[in-house]
Length: 177
Image 1 (cartoon, helix red, strand yellow):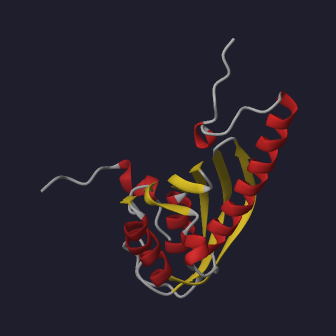
Image 2: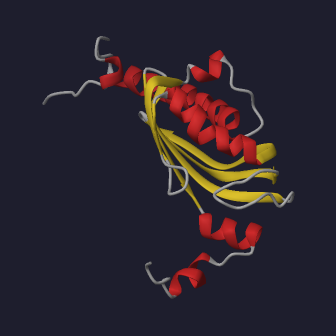
């Protein structure tokens, strides 16, 4: 039978089975540690410096939900995804409930907390602390995230923070002009 090489380390010789598992566990631990640093730097109160920027590949793609959108490249991600979030939420922090990595993929569930001080998703500042439930996923190659996905519980955010029931509002579609 044929052994498939891990594409992130295709130039390395294949070790014995026990060493392969040890290497995989060590890499998963390192990837998990780096993703924790990344989630706090990007979405929480952490500062983005050269070390955290290097955790994203320069040509990365980030896929966010409606209102957040797609960012291709690190500069676009910082300007069009993180920029509006940081302008809208002061005193941010990311509370991680669960983080797990398997192979080259990681996932995290948690909450972005922050004081709503600027327009966010079309909603004017409330100056109250808001809580946004989030699911984050990353595809990691050679220690860098090459893809990232985010899922946000926007119906909960809009109802709890802004008093808008998105489901009720959309139950009867507005007429098109």
